[in-house]
Length: 122
Image (tube, rainbow, N blue to C red):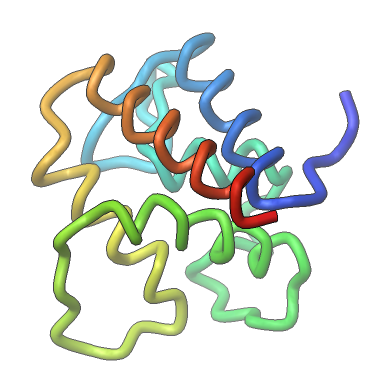
């Protein structure tokens, strides 16, 4: 499978991972292999543990793509940040995933809308 190169392709691959492994809250990936929205984006972008969001490596092209793709999901939320994280889009997606998304179907609908948005923006 080829590497995602655009926010839309990364969002599509992350959505596929949710379908394959399931969706969760509170973890990038839980012990059952289910992913949250950002966890699915990180996995789809092949971001390893040493290059993830917690490393604060803002020059990594993979994490930059994740942040750009997360922006399309974040634009569909009403989350307001009260600090200035290094990856603000990812932070908004994490908060929305954990607080507002109620189930798997709603998570997929969120991704579907973000994919349409990203494809129209390309």
